[in-house]
Length: 300
Image (cartoon, rainbow, N blue to C red; front, side):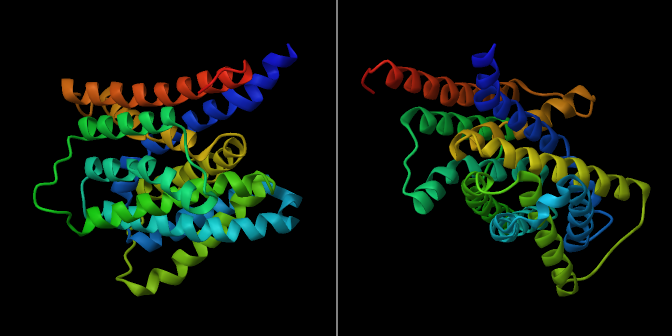
């Protein structure tokens, strides 16, 4: 029983947590798009992450006294703010499908971020999974770029780069500090930066039940809970492995939309989702084979 518990804690538990997070983020894509009809980008982010910070602080309690949490949380908070600001701003100027595809390109940039920060090179299986995931993303979203990238797409592409560094560094800092405290600091920094940026553009807020529902869902569930799980899982999972699982986000988004009857998936979209899943399987199973081979003394 002990080996089984250890396998769950070190291997399958983190993967399950990352899958849950991905499903939550995929489900809130359209929610955020609708919320931006009632508020400007920075007002929405300040409210979302402000509520998330309060919820996370309740979970963290005395762990907030950790100096390591504040050191790492400030760095991750700046990156988190940059990623969400670029994504949310870009989403207000582009379509959800293009935003989903470009955000999904984080999986491409994570190996380079890892190389730049840690000089660590991902394995061949992981890179093969990355290539398959990108192909699947293109098929699923049906994105075409025939006349260059408009402003919204460029902003979202910048978001993917920032997210890649956030994912790469989360694994490092999550091993040094309590996850809930680390996340609380991130959310405090993100909410504070969003509040500071609110006067930089036209402020807009239409108080509707749908908008406040979106703030609660994205602030508590998609931010406080999901990012806390991310910090815990990435203390045990590699950045590339996490990014591969996160590439399933548009698959969950499309599946939920189809399940609710909001749209019907074409054969190309179904194939795209299958290729993304195949990419995750290739990266995960290939890495497991490599570890088993090393453990038995085989050559790579």
